[in-house]
Image (tube, rainbow, N blue to C red; front, side, top):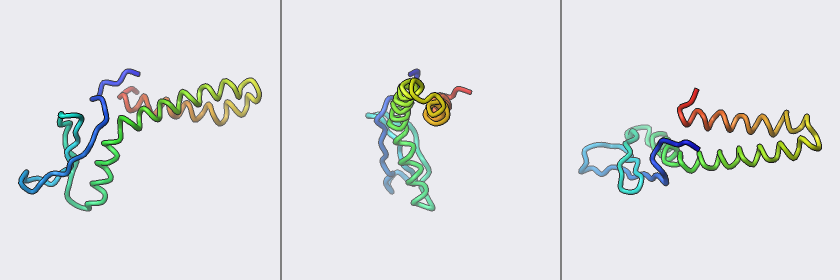
Length: 106
């Protein structure tokens, strides 16, 4: 993998009233990565922040799934080429496409 982002895990911390802003701080170790909107609707802002904080783990999980699907496609291709090409291989391709998008590739 050729990630250029900050190594995870990432975590969230909600701002305090004394900070004068209503945001979720996105953190990695002791580093401040940025903030995600606070405000309203609260549940949506929080859900967006939680999803962003999960990004490094989601990327790794998707890459693991892609590798497993590619291996499964090789095994299936020996027994049922059409099944391997139509189902498993398409899933592996979709995973690879989304991983490339996460890396900022066209």
